[in-house]
Length: 331
Image 1 (spheres, rainbow, N blue to C red):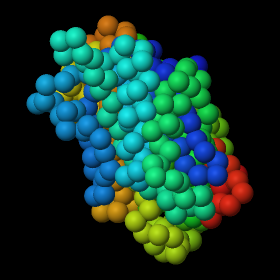
Image 2: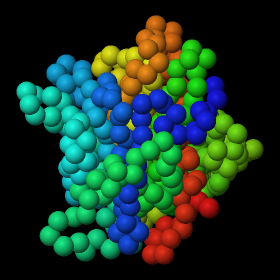
Image 3: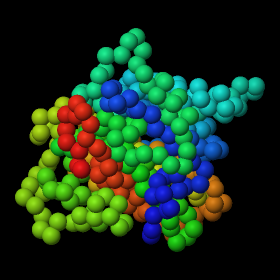
Image 4: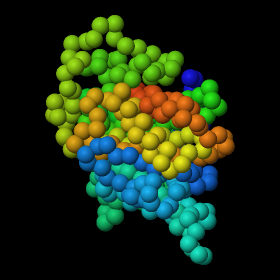
Protein backbone atom coordinates (compact mmCIF):
# COMPACT_ATOMS: atom_id res chain seq x y z
CA UNK A 1 0.00 0.00 0.00
CA UNK A 2 1.35 3.42 -0.93
CA UNK A 3 -0.13 6.92 -0.81
CA UNK A 4 -1.54 8.63 -3.86
CA UNK A 5 0.27 11.49 -5.58
CA UNK A 6 -1.09 14.16 -3.23
CA UNK A 7 -1.66 11.96 -0.16
CA UNK A 8 -5.07 13.64 0.05
CA UNK A 9 -8.65 12.46 -0.30
CA UNK A 10 -8.64 14.16 -3.71
CA UNK A 11 -6.47 11.32 -5.02
CA UNK A 12 -9.88 9.65 -5.33
CA UNK A 13 -11.05 10.63 -8.82
CA UNK A 14 -14.22 12.68 -8.87
CA UNK A 15 -13.67 14.72 -5.70
CA UNK A 16 -12.59 18.27 -4.90
CA UNK A 17 -12.11 19.83 -1.46
CA UNK A 18 -12.35 23.46 -0.36
CA UNK A 19 -11.58 25.24 2.91
CA UNK A 20 -12.69 28.55 4.37
CA UNK A 21 -11.79 29.87 7.80
CA UNK A 22 -11.80 33.03 9.89
CA UNK A 23 -8.64 33.49 11.95
CA UNK A 24 -10.27 35.82 14.50
CA UNK A 25 -13.19 33.42 14.86
CA UNK A 26 -10.78 30.45 15.12
CA UNK A 27 -13.22 28.33 13.17
CA UNK A 28 -14.03 27.31 9.63
CA UNK A 29 -15.62 24.91 7.20
CA UNK A 30 -14.40 22.22 4.81
CA UNK A 31 -16.43 20.91 1.87
CA UNK A 32 -16.00 17.79 -0.25
CA UNK A 33 -17.60 18.48 -3.65
CA UNK A 34 -18.44 15.51 -5.87
CA UNK A 35 -17.94 16.12 -9.61
CA UNK A 36 -21.02 13.94 -10.14
CA UNK A 37 -23.42 12.66 -7.49
CA UNK A 38 -21.64 9.99 -5.44
CA UNK A 39 -23.15 7.01 -3.64
CA UNK A 40 -23.05 7.76 0.07
CA UNK A 41 -23.82 6.57 3.56
CA UNK A 42 -22.63 7.34 7.10
CA UNK A 43 -22.12 5.89 10.55
CA UNK A 44 -22.34 7.76 13.88
CA UNK A 45 -20.55 6.12 16.83
CA UNK A 46 -20.13 9.12 19.14
CA UNK A 47 -22.71 9.94 21.77
CA UNK A 48 -23.09 13.66 21.00
CA UNK A 49 -23.44 14.13 17.23
CA UNK A 50 -24.47 17.29 15.41
CA UNK A 51 -25.54 16.48 11.86
CA UNK A 52 -27.60 17.48 8.84
CA UNK A 53 -29.35 15.18 6.33
CA UNK A 54 -27.92 11.97 7.77
CA UNK A 55 -31.23 10.08 7.82
CA UNK A 56 -31.32 10.02 4.01
CA UNK A 57 -27.94 8.23 4.03
CA UNK A 58 -29.36 5.07 5.57
CA UNK A 59 -29.34 2.26 2.96
CA UNK A 60 -33.11 1.71 3.20
CA UNK A 61 -33.91 5.33 2.26
CA UNK A 62 -34.55 6.57 -1.27
CA UNK A 63 -31.81 9.05 -2.19
CA UNK A 64 -28.72 7.10 -3.25
CA UNK A 65 -26.19 9.84 -4.00
CA UNK A 66 -25.03 13.21 -2.70
CA UNK A 67 -23.56 16.32 -4.31
CA UNK A 68 -21.29 17.33 -1.44
CA UNK A 69 -20.40 16.69 2.22
CA UNK A 70 -19.47 19.47 4.63
CA UNK A 71 -17.50 19.39 7.88
CA UNK A 72 -17.69 22.51 10.01
CA UNK A 73 -16.76 24.11 13.27
CA UNK A 74 -19.27 26.16 15.19
CA UNK A 75 -21.26 23.48 17.01
CA UNK A 76 -24.95 23.64 16.03
CA UNK A 77 -24.39 27.11 14.55
CA UNK A 78 -22.06 25.48 12.03
CA UNK A 79 -24.89 23.51 10.48
CA UNK A 80 -25.66 26.74 8.60
CA UNK A 81 -22.61 25.91 6.43
CA UNK A 82 -24.77 23.42 4.55
CA UNK A 83 -27.01 26.23 3.31
CA UNK A 84 -23.99 28.02 1.87
CA UNK A 85 -22.83 24.87 0.11
CA UNK A 86 -26.34 24.37 -1.29
CA UNK A 87 -26.43 27.95 -2.55
CA UNK A 88 -23.18 27.51 -4.48
CA UNK A 89 -24.25 24.19 -5.98
CA UNK A 90 -27.67 25.58 -6.91
CA UNK A 91 -25.93 28.38 -8.82
CA UNK A 92 -24.09 25.65 -10.71
CA UNK A 93 -27.33 23.84 -11.59
CA UNK A 94 -26.52 20.89 -9.34
CA UNK A 95 -28.98 18.81 -7.35
CA UNK A 96 -31.51 16.00 -7.14
CA UNK A 97 -34.09 16.51 -9.86
CA UNK A 98 -37.74 16.76 -8.79
CA UNK A 99 -39.63 17.79 -11.90
CA UNK A 100 -38.22 21.18 -12.96
CA UNK A 101 -36.58 21.73 -9.55
CA UNK A 102 -33.09 20.68 -8.48
CA UNK A 103 -32.25 20.26 -4.80
CA UNK A 104 -28.55 19.90 -3.94
CA UNK A 105 -28.08 17.02 -1.49
CA UNK A 106 -25.55 18.17 1.13
CA UNK A 107 -25.23 16.16 4.36
CA UNK A 108 -22.74 17.33 6.94
CA UNK A 109 -21.58 17.38 10.54
CA UNK A 110 -20.16 19.84 13.05
CA UNK A 111 -17.64 19.92 15.87
CA UNK A 112 -17.59 22.10 18.98
CA UNK A 113 -14.96 24.87 18.83
CA UNK A 114 -16.79 27.71 20.60
CA UNK A 115 -14.39 27.86 23.58
CA UNK A 116 -10.98 28.00 21.89
CA UNK A 117 -9.85 31.61 22.24
CA UNK A 118 -11.61 32.85 19.09
CA UNK A 119 -14.04 35.77 18.84
CA UNK A 120 -17.55 34.32 18.70
CA UNK A 121 -19.36 37.65 19.11
CA UNK A 122 -21.04 37.60 15.69
CA UNK A 123 -24.15 39.65 14.95
CA UNK A 124 -27.64 38.20 14.47
CA UNK A 125 -26.55 35.32 12.25
CA UNK A 126 -23.40 33.20 12.58
CA UNK A 127 -20.89 33.32 9.69
CA UNK A 128 -21.03 29.65 8.70
CA UNK A 129 -23.39 29.99 5.73
CA UNK A 130 -20.88 32.32 4.07
CA UNK A 131 -17.98 30.07 5.07
CA UNK A 132 -19.78 27.11 3.47
CA UNK A 133 -20.30 29.08 0.27
CA UNK A 134 -16.66 30.24 0.19
CA UNK A 135 -15.32 26.74 0.88
CA UNK A 136 -17.36 25.38 -2.03
CA UNK A 137 -16.04 28.06 -4.35
CA UNK A 138 -12.48 27.28 -3.15
CA UNK A 139 -12.81 23.57 -3.92
CA UNK A 140 -10.07 21.96 -5.97
CA UNK A 141 -7.65 19.04 -6.02
CA UNK A 142 -5.20 20.67 -3.59
CA UNK A 143 -6.03 22.08 -0.17
CA UNK A 144 -4.30 22.90 3.12
CA UNK A 145 -4.19 20.71 6.22
CA UNK A 146 -3.71 21.46 9.90
CA UNK A 147 -5.22 24.73 11.13
CA UNK A 148 -7.47 25.24 8.12
CA UNK A 149 -11.12 24.76 7.27
CA UNK A 150 -13.04 22.72 9.81
CA UNK A 151 -9.77 22.14 11.68
CA UNK A 152 -9.03 25.84 12.21
CA UNK A 153 -10.14 25.82 15.83
CA UNK A 154 -10.03 22.14 16.71
CA UNK A 155 -8.51 20.88 19.98
CA UNK A 156 -7.56 17.47 21.41
CA UNK A 157 -6.40 16.46 24.88
CA UNK A 158 -3.31 18.60 25.42
CA UNK A 159 -2.75 19.62 21.79
CA UNK A 160 -4.38 21.60 19.02
CA UNK A 161 -6.32 19.44 16.62
CA UNK A 162 -6.62 20.10 12.92
CA UNK A 163 -7.71 19.03 9.47
CA UNK A 164 -6.04 15.85 8.21
CA UNK A 165 -6.11 13.81 5.03
CA UNK A 166 -4.39 10.78 3.55
CA UNK A 167 -4.79 8.31 0.69
CA UNK A 168 -3.72 4.85 -0.43
CA UNK A 169 -3.46 3.07 -3.77
CA UNK A 170 -4.48 -0.58 -3.51
CA UNK A 171 -3.08 -3.44 -5.60
CA UNK A 172 -6.57 -4.13 -6.95
CA UNK A 173 -6.54 -0.76 -8.76
CA UNK A 174 -8.78 1.06 -6.30
CA UNK A 175 -7.93 4.24 -4.40
CA UNK A 176 -9.14 5.15 -0.94
CA UNK A 177 -8.82 8.48 0.84
CA UNK A 178 -9.76 10.04 4.17
CA UNK A 179 -10.52 13.56 5.34
CA UNK A 180 -10.97 14.36 9.03
CA UNK A 181 -11.37 17.31 11.39
CA UNK A 182 -9.83 16.17 14.69
CA UNK A 183 -11.40 17.72 17.79
CA UNK A 184 -11.37 14.69 20.06
CA UNK A 185 -11.97 14.42 23.80
CA UNK A 186 -9.07 11.96 23.89
CA UNK A 187 -5.40 12.03 22.98
CA UNK A 188 -3.62 11.10 19.73
CA UNK A 189 -0.23 10.37 21.34
CA UNK A 190 1.09 7.87 23.85
CA UNK A 191 0.88 9.87 27.06
CA UNK A 192 2.62 13.22 26.73
CA UNK A 193 5.21 11.83 24.29
CA UNK A 194 5.70 12.77 20.64
CA UNK A 195 4.78 9.26 19.48
CA UNK A 196 1.45 9.04 17.67
CA UNK A 197 -0.90 6.16 18.40
CA UNK A 198 -1.33 5.85 14.63
CA UNK A 199 2.43 5.19 14.19
CA UNK A 200 2.09 1.57 12.93
CA UNK A 201 0.21 2.88 9.88
CA UNK A 202 2.51 5.80 9.02
CA UNK A 203 3.95 5.82 5.50
CA UNK A 204 7.35 7.53 5.33
CA UNK A 205 7.43 10.50 7.68
CA UNK A 206 3.99 11.89 6.86
CA UNK A 207 3.46 12.80 10.51
CA UNK A 208 7.04 13.17 11.65
CA UNK A 209 8.39 9.64 11.42
CA UNK A 210 8.65 9.31 15.21
CA UNK A 211 7.45 5.72 15.11
CA UNK A 212 6.40 3.78 18.17
CA UNK A 213 8.20 4.57 21.44
CA UNK A 214 11.10 2.17 22.14
CA UNK A 215 9.49 1.64 25.53
CA UNK A 216 6.01 2.76 26.46
CA UNK A 217 6.31 6.10 28.26
CA UNK A 218 5.02 6.63 31.74
CA UNK A 219 1.30 7.26 31.57
CA UNK A 220 0.88 5.59 28.18
CA UNK A 221 -2.20 3.74 29.41
CA UNK A 222 -3.57 6.43 31.68
CA UNK A 223 -6.77 7.81 30.19
CA UNK A 224 -5.73 11.24 28.95
CA UNK A 225 -8.68 13.45 28.03
CA UNK A 226 -9.67 17.09 28.01
CA UNK A 227 -11.37 16.51 31.35
CA UNK A 228 -8.07 15.42 32.96
CA UNK A 229 -6.39 18.56 31.63
CA UNK A 230 -9.03 21.06 32.71
CA UNK A 231 -10.44 21.64 29.22
CA UNK A 232 -14.23 21.78 28.68
CA UNK A 233 -15.48 18.20 28.66
CA UNK A 234 -18.26 18.85 26.12
CA UNK A 235 -16.12 20.63 23.52
CA UNK A 236 -15.40 17.65 21.28
CA UNK A 237 -16.13 15.58 18.16
CA UNK A 238 -14.10 14.10 15.31
CA UNK A 239 -15.87 14.29 11.95
CA UNK A 240 -14.64 12.58 8.81
CA UNK A 241 -15.15 11.40 5.25
CA UNK A 242 -13.84 8.14 3.75
CA UNK A 243 -13.98 7.89 -0.04
CA UNK A 244 -13.13 5.49 -2.83
CA UNK A 245 -13.25 5.45 -6.63
CA UNK A 246 -14.72 1.92 -6.59
CA UNK A 247 -18.31 1.08 -7.52
CA UNK A 248 -20.16 0.49 -4.23
CA UNK A 249 -23.77 0.11 -3.22
CA UNK A 250 -25.22 2.30 -0.51
CA UNK A 251 -25.05 -0.66 1.90
CA UNK A 252 -21.37 -1.16 1.09
CA UNK A 253 -20.75 2.53 1.75
CA UNK A 254 -22.34 2.05 5.17
CA UNK A 255 -20.00 -0.85 5.88
CA UNK A 256 -17.01 1.21 4.67
CA UNK A 257 -17.94 4.01 7.09
CA UNK A 258 -18.13 1.50 9.94
CA UNK A 259 -14.69 0.13 9.04
CA UNK A 260 -13.19 3.63 8.90
CA UNK A 261 -14.25 4.17 12.51
CA UNK A 262 -11.59 1.60 13.41
CA UNK A 263 -9.12 4.28 12.34
CA UNK A 264 -10.49 6.53 15.08
CA UNK A 265 -9.86 3.79 17.63
CA UNK A 266 -6.32 3.22 16.30
CA UNK A 267 -5.40 6.92 16.42
CA UNK A 268 -7.36 8.41 19.35
CA UNK A 269 -7.75 7.05 22.86
CA UNK A 270 -10.41 7.09 24.10
CA UNK A 271 -12.66 7.52 21.07
CA UNK A 272 -16.42 7.21 20.45
CA UNK A 273 -17.15 8.54 23.92
CA UNK A 274 -20.54 9.82 25.12
CA UNK A 275 -19.11 13.34 24.81
CA UNK A 276 -17.81 12.97 21.24
CA UNK A 277 -20.06 13.21 18.20
CA UNK A 278 -17.87 10.95 16.07
CA UNK A 279 -19.19 10.36 12.56
CA UNK A 280 -17.76 9.03 9.28
CA UNK A 281 -19.39 9.76 5.92
CA UNK A 282 -18.56 7.33 3.10
CA UNK A 283 -18.49 8.23 -0.60
CA UNK A 284 -18.05 6.04 -3.70
CA UNK A 285 -17.45 7.97 -6.93
CA UNK A 286 -17.55 4.87 -9.21
CA UNK A 287 -14.72 6.48 -11.24
CA UNK A 288 -12.79 3.25 -11.85
CA UNK A 289 -15.80 1.18 -12.87
CA UNK A 290 -14.43 -1.55 -10.59
CA UNK A 291 -16.95 -3.31 -8.34
CA UNK A 292 -15.07 -5.16 -5.58
CA UNK A 293 -15.65 -8.84 -4.94
CA UNK A 294 -15.75 -10.09 -1.33
CA UNK A 295 -11.95 -10.21 -0.99
CA UNK A 296 -11.39 -6.79 -2.58
CA UNK A 297 -14.08 -5.23 -0.40
CA UNK A 298 -12.49 -6.69 2.74
CA UNK A 299 -9.17 -5.13 1.68
CA UNK A 300 -10.89 -1.82 1.00
CA UNK A 301 -12.40 -1.83 4.50
CA UNK A 302 -9.05 -2.71 6.09
CA UNK A 303 -7.38 0.10 4.17
CA UNK A 304 -10.12 2.49 5.30
CA UNK A 305 -9.13 2.08 8.94
CA UNK A 306 -5.41 2.57 8.21
CA UNK A 307 -5.93 5.62 5.98
CA UNK A 308 -8.24 7.21 8.54
CA UNK A 309 -5.70 6.70 11.34
CA UNK A 310 -2.99 8.34 9.22
CA UNK A 311 -5.26 11.28 8.39
CA UNK A 312 -6.01 11.86 12.08
CA UNK A 313 -2.33 11.98 13.02
CA UNK A 314 -1.55 14.30 10.07
CA UNK A 315 -4.26 16.72 11.18
CA UNK A 316 -2.69 17.15 14.62
CA UNK A 317 0.90 17.05 13.35
CA UNK A 318 0.28 19.86 10.83
CA UNK A 319 -1.59 22.21 13.18
CA UNK A 320 0.24 25.48 13.78
CA UNK A 321 0.40 27.91 16.70
CA UNK A 322 -1.56 31.14 16.27
CA UNK A 323 -2.26 34.20 18.45
CA UNK A 324 -4.85 33.57 21.12
CA UNK A 325 -4.48 29.78 21.20
CA UNK A 326 -5.57 28.04 24.39
CA UNK A 327 -3.59 24.86 23.64
CA UNK A 328 -0.11 24.28 22.14
CA UNK A 329 0.36 22.96 18.61
CA UNK A 330 2.32 19.73 18.14
CA UNK A 331 5.00 21.61 16.21
